Image 1 (spheres, one colour):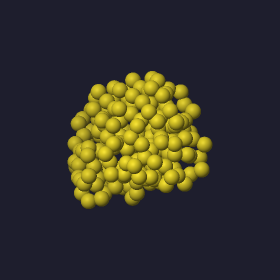
Image 2 (cartoon, rainbow, N blue to C red):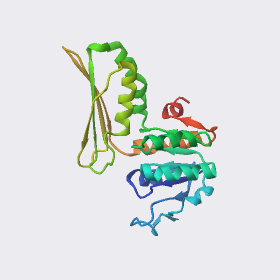
Image 3 (spheres, helix red, strand yellow):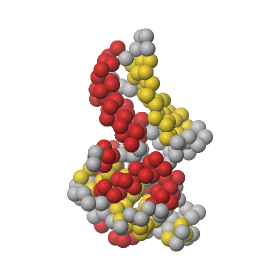
Length: 237
């Protein structure tokens, strides 16, 4: 049984990871973290009291972090201190914070991905080949839509799509971000030539998609050597 630590347990993703993991026999929730001052501090999730002290990381086997860039930066210090594997889904990290992820991955294994769904990671793999075959006669743009409270725009997933396509095309790929209502996550990649248009769209119907991917990554990274891994590594086994 893997003892999990979950950061941001009062957030949209953290709460769902907690709920799903609580019903999977392979996991035991050993630590649930949330910022001090959040409304749920002092209350309980099931029988587990929420903590604001990351030093409790010594209790866990794997730590999962879907929080904020600032929260992740602090949490990286603790996973390095206690040498705990990390599943990291936080987006919007700046260059300094990304460099810190790389540095800590030399101490502990980290699965880092802007999106932990199977479908999106399949698109990460196949889009470069589509762009190569279509060639320079096709222009590419990306449209992404998320709920109105999502803090980063464009999304980490859209940025990743753009990055891998820019490596093939050597052109900047425009991204259009929409923040409306309670949209879980939509991404559309448009390839447009003079006489035709190809649209590839991924829609997330539930956050369970990402939460279950994070838990799959937690099982996978538990026994791995230090290094920076992606969901492609997790899904290849």
